Image (cartoon, rainbow, N blue to C red):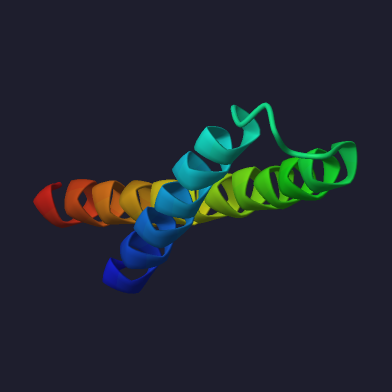
Amino acid sequence: MAKSIKNYEKKYTALEEIVKKLDDESLSMHELLKTYKEGLTLVKECSDLLQLVEEEVEQIIETVQVDTN
């Protein structure tokens, strides 16, 4: 899970940089579209990583509940 969290943090940081870049009014339409596409890819990847972590947490909770019963 630690690797997933580090990957998420890296991707989230990259996404923050893309948001800043998209605010740059001097970018050409081509650059804007390319950057926007990169951002969408990162959003999907972050979402997938969060889903994996959520599933791991649910498994841990289930294991603890089974062990305590």
